[in-house]
Length: 163
Image (tube, rainbow, N blue to C red; front, side, top):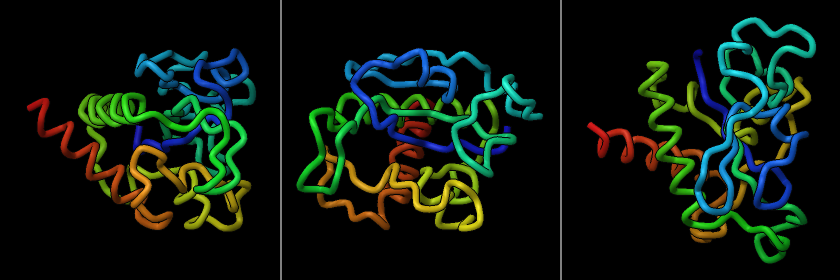
């Protein structure tokens, strides 16, 4: 596996069967990690119906991690009824650190990114225009364009903490 792409599910606080088909791992409101239908290794070679299709144009070699939240999000002043919670976010970052360790994935902008960042870098894919993750309710001071850097810093911190 060469990268991790981090999402919000745009749903409620617990994973649905539909979401489990599209992400390898999902983090619920309590910070618990749920396995998706497919293993990360299923995305080494993507075959129709046999991999987690989480990032249009970027699934091959990518692990999809989703934070179960953000249904109804419109903007930072209207986040809907399921905002990302601090406990949930921190658990997701800690888990991503363990995935980086397990799969020897460097914590760089090329290898650990949000779905939003992937879409910006790959404007000719169906990921262009995706908004996950552009806002972090527990950390409202982090701007849209700094979310990815903030996430990578958190993951680096958790990785160092685990050493």
